Image (cartoon, rainbow, N blue to C red; front, side, top):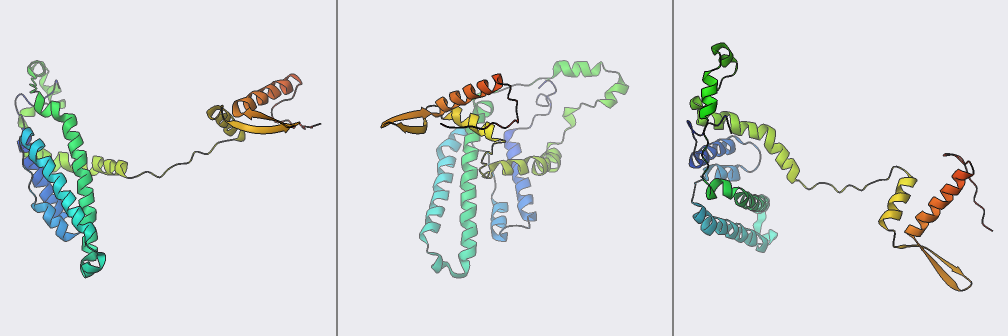
Length: 250
């Protein structure tokens, strides 16, 4: 924040929306994968900055209603009636589902960042930084250039920032959104399995023994206690780890 550009060369949110729209149009027109029809449609959709009130009152409900209507329509049409258009309908349905998830995620992020974009008006100043920079030796100043007033936001966003996001950030975000396969934990040894089972299910019944018509129950906690006592007894008798022990029952 001390090296901000907002005091001398600010860029407004409306301008960023316009630049994002230009980049989106270029992206979808150059895209070779997916449906050509959907890519062309996406490239022609223009983004527009609106007021917070208008976004919350009209934009969000309209997005939810539109996607729901398209999804309901596609669900009601029998696949047999679509004929050769069945493949395209499946692509449209998948695109609608992706857009609905995208809209929901955008809504959540909007309310998360609303205090920073709408509710408060922040002012960034770099007077002290600029004064300190002027005191630097000219040779050192060449090694540490800082001239926010010369930033071309059009060139930066379309040729640096957004291509950088596509290359380094978006793939990781998409990877994180994919459902991850469920991993089943495997124990390294029988001892680890025994310790985990007797701790996690200490109150559950592990063994039932009937003696002279009377049932005795031992929980996993009791089983662990008995095993520890047996281990202590064997240790006192000089039995070491790895040695074999025979158990006899009378």
